[in-house]
Image (cartoon, rainbow, N blue to C red; front, side, top):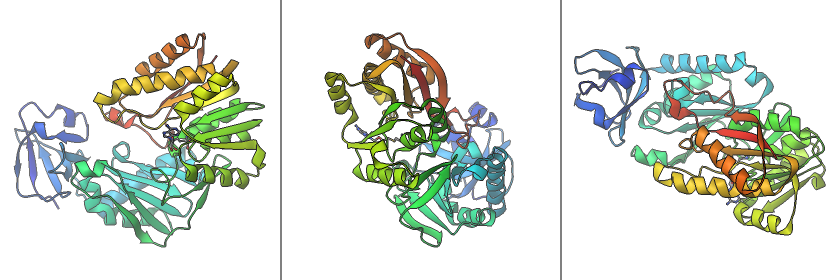
Length: 395
Ligand code: SAH
């Protein structure tokens, strides 16, 4: 059911015509009807042409997020179709066949703005980031269970972006049975332990799957320093690739405890993995002062830039750790360096890494460029969906 019409200002229909799914408040001429938060509205040009249907979000600067660029009804069947399409794409790549943990719905890029769904074994973890996702979340949950025979759906909508939508954060069981304290998943032959309740995001950084597989190929015989390790994702991949040893550094002791369990789950002896709880910025300086050297260094920091004002500070942060990373590498060693800040564009990131190499006094080369895993696609009309980029550099 449609509950109102959002009429765009003259000449402000270009983005939506190009299938960008967001309508900013500044583009809205007026609203007909009295839509409630999250309800479905039509989006029309000043001349009255229908551009699509979307979710009304009065508190946000993004006042409509389009579900569809047609007149189609938004209902359980609509969500079922989108979920089926998302699953079909991933099945075509063999992702669910080889991985019991994967991203099933990647929001806008799977045609479902504000909806994130990750599969972890027999459970689904869902995030409803926007008013539209919130309004429909029980319908979406039912549609998910029609498509995927999961035992339950756990909600992790404890994200700050909800505040911009006028929504409180919320977590808990949305459908079905409660999940066990830990879910063990398989990723390309590697085993990982996931805590969907207390872990970061939905519990695990699925977006690094393909990059973990790349690192695995380079790891034989190497000693790997895995900075910002979380639960040891890259370290486990390194050990599967025949690494001599992996050292995790993270500020979170609970994450490191899971890393230790995960090593055991994969059958690796405890001495193969070291766990250091502390601040990467501080520890890398100490290691440099001690003259320590590694064959591989991984730098996968959290998002340094949440908005444009933080970009400059973020750039300094990336420069700092990358400089230290290069210093800690043996000649010929490999740096796996990442940025998950969407605002940090690939070109700028590469330039920062290049500057860091110069300041570290090394003439490094890029062996490979990396990005987010294939279950995190980016809609061409929605470049905001691209955020994770990485470089493999050789010293
Ligand atoms: N590479 C990981 C994901 C890293 S997420 C994977 O593949 O799973 C970023 C991690 O950085 C988080 O676990 C967070 O606890 C940690 N972190 C954030 N700031 C830190 C700091 N200053 N020092 C050490 N760890 C930090």
